[in-house]
Image (cartoon, rainbow, N blue to C red; front, side):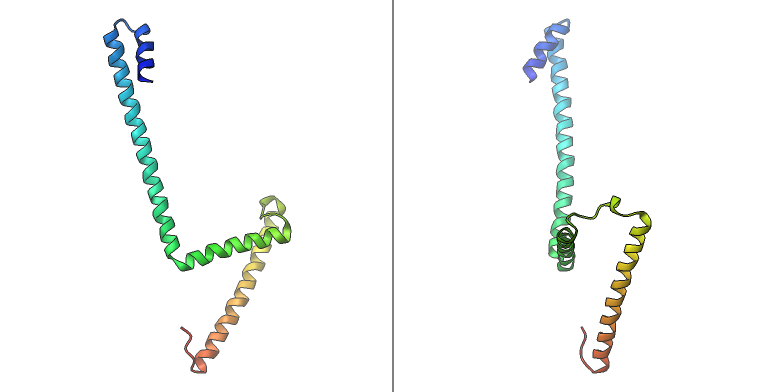
Length: 126
């Protein structure tokens, strides 16, 4: 590439020496920018890798991720597709979310009551 640039500039510039100088400067600038760009990408990749490793070492996050995967697969089996915003109106989405949260509150209250019963019976809950 450098030789092609030098030859092209040789036809455009008054002297071969100035063409070589310009080509060398262009190549230097190009490789510096390329190196900076690659360094930036490497830093971003390292950050993503560190975040991934942190997630993998956290069992709770892993369980939550698996829950999302399982729920997505369940929805695809049940409805034939993933959730799509155009399937419901915004009001219907709000209603759906409220119903889901109501269900989760029922589950949490039942669990809390069960835990309280265990504590009152003298059983360890932790």
